[in-house]
Image (spheres, rainbow, N blue to C red):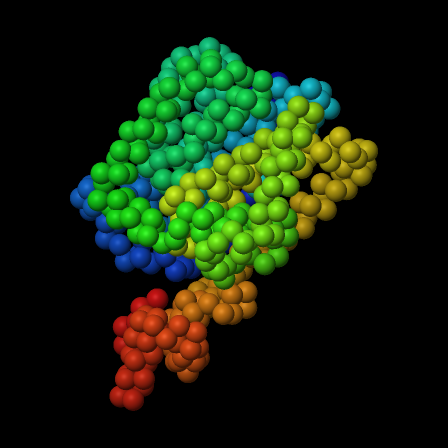
Length: 455
């Protein structure tokens, strides 16, 4: 019976992913895809990948790119892989939601909550950056190993299976770290799950020591690895601790807004760097209110507390000490957002009658799916993506330079020149836009255009 239920759920999730992301298969490589994949020989052959192990980061992520590249299926192969990863993650969300609900006092009334939460996760538009944007795979693939590790740990605890707890779980944690470094929150996520689902701190710590050991070793690897050390040093010089806190609160509030109202999704948001908490009063108030709500709901509505604690864990602590150069990306919500879907479904189940609940679910699924399909169209070409981004971040020089580059690659040189000039007006020190403008003017004067430009 359990296997049949899982099979039916997987069928519905597959249908949802296909409906929402079928039109992404025709999309082009975009932005970082060129530096990371198309123009990067280290992911195009196995010997090159092996050689790059000592020179780069994220080896498991690069393995996935290498597999796609040597299969010679073109850009559609990369997109199809991203879709399959997303489908796997939606099924993991379904299984984790089932495990969570089993420990709740309203479990008998919430039998449909896992599949609905997973469907909402599958179709929500904020996922497009992690699914449709090929380089967004770093978030979705890391999430796959992260959630697989969490589910393995839970099953190991239930089954008293020491191999799952002490071996498979930390191995999956290592895999997640090998895709993206932000997986370092994994041991804290295990503790959070234990605490919310009625576990005790001391027994949990005894079960979790292999994951804490992996965290310690990975920290030493990051510190002594030249590639990681350079990036960390660069981040630490980026802002003060108070400035980082203010900036992360801005990003936190922004990403929650994107999740709640996903109609202004943006691959290059125009958030400003903050230097003092006094500049982020509204986001600070939002954070404090949510923190208080988390504490108030801990006993009576633990799903609400779990969702708030999870999203805070994934979005705030890490970047206080290692700030992002790009302040916020929609794909940050990919791992952070799944408990919010579960909490939303549980609350609607408890508050609405059956008919009203069904109507609400259908409306949400239809609305989210429609927006996702439309958002995928923005990723169809570089011009479409950056024209959309210019509308949403009109005051950001990099966005105009990238749109100019896209125009240039399509031989729309007059429009390209306009965008490079706009970028320089916003940032006179932007060497990329200056170089691109110089090449356009120089080659136009000679009647030639060699496209030796930089994005």
